[in-house]
Amino acid sequence: MDSLDGGQVRCLTRGKSYNEHASFSPDGRHIVWMSSQDNRNNGTDWWLMDADGSHQRRLTHFNLPGYPEGSGTPAFAGLVHWAPNGVQLLGGVQYSLLKQEGRIILMSLDDSVIGK
Image 1 (cartoon, rainbow, N blue to C red):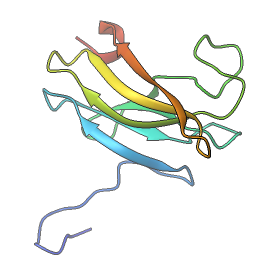
Image 2 (cartoon, rainbow, N blue to C red):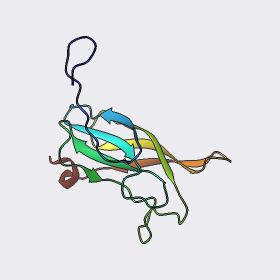
Image 3 (cartoon, rainbow, N blue to C red):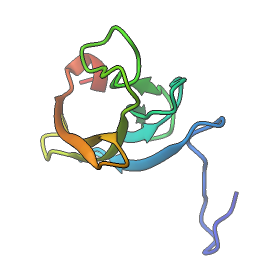
Image 4 (cartoon, rainbow, N blue to C red):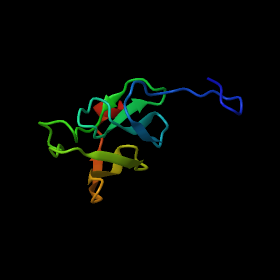
């Protein structure tokens, strides 16, 4: 697909999932974004992909039973920001959109996740 200025535009996500808040890692090798993919309760989690859209993998499990970060109710991962070290991520998760209740989450990615 061509953009209005003649450059190339490419879709990196597919399907009917809700996808938003994408952010490049400091080295430009990865993208983290928020998605409802694989969440039956319509909540969202953070996912990671290579900059070309390949190797998509889930980072969090806020909405899946049996995971330590799961709350038992829909959770909505929001904006996330990379630390300059390219290993830590800081983001907000809301547990009630009506009451605006949420938490700030700090994640540290290990080498197996980011391929260092």
